[in-house]
Image (cartoon, rainbow, N blue to C red; front, side):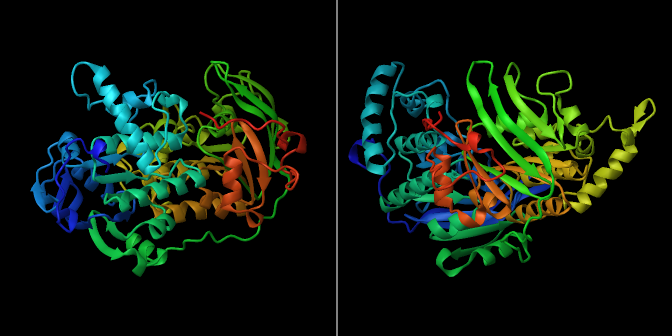
Length: 548
């Protein structure tokens, strides 16, 4: 790092390993999250860590960053033993962490977020002045340009991530941990991030990358370690392995990485959306004349960076638009008009009309985290006749369904009496997916189906979505994962700033072209709208600015 950024940082060392973990173990009650973990990360390298949900990756990194204390084992930083009592100790040791969900104060400026917790004294003016100079040098050195005076809520997701990296570098981090860093980035933003990481590596920084995207592991890392059920099962040079081998190491069996599906056989329209508009309670137009059709027996994928109207679209279709929103347009389900604003516009009515919904945020909208898993199986369907047992609900029937869902969808552990919060993210997702698919909906709305989900669960969820399509059902898939959109969709529509920018067939497009559409760049002359989206609603006369 440049002299101005060093601020009297740690002395250089010739130790070959930036990080050494020796026989690290950690238990939470009867659950052993880490068992005898050994890990060596050479200095100045990018090291990937992969594994299924619940494999222990986050626990291990939380130990390294001081969130948890290990029950046993030793940590060495640059060859020196260290006890990391808390995150401040980790920061002083030169460790920084960029979390999947950013830890930024939305109404603070970039500069204020950078110095938060690292002020030089009671007076902020000297700290801000010094930080501004250091920030300018860091931004130039590592291509992390961002306006220091903009507030966080005015920045795109990609720029917010840059702020998180700058925070770590400002605190003199020589070791940087990134947790699922590309989950909400466009392809162009992800490519830029990787260029930044290569630049950091060239400066001698050590980077640990936690990701479930095997393509990213193969493209960017020097070495990769694989965890399974709390243990380290392999550490290999990336150049000496393959995605197939890594997937098998992660789950303990061969995994089909490509989605296997026959061509779609679309039938009659199930969902017809025309000129759908939504203005939120602050007067911001979130949906701007959306229009599309979905037919029985096909999957329509909606691609786009988070925050471009996909959430509002799913919520409106699912029957719970945000409170105070003004809605116009029309939605027809199986030829019948859906109520958008009246007393029959709620989620219960949508379910009665044959719409299932896997929401984007499983913990906030899909599950009641403190309720048992068997209770969550009936969530939203508890008033159905089969669950009514006179004055009281038929809990025995609900529990029996839960047992069946757990078996059919391979939910682990098999204990349906555990609270939902005690399951890993991937298994929480399986509970929600099982509940909605097993109701056999005519239309499945599914948002971010594999966000934070491991490779084995991804394979399973993808297969069930395709099986639903092949059974003659319609699927609306919303995902920020372009690989997922391309693999599952029969048609792809791209959303930007509340509009549909265009529609493509997966076989006739590329991630680059979709990435441009996701950033608001379109070419309506070369790509006329297809039958699924009315031409008058596909054309964009004035390109919107990048959403904030």
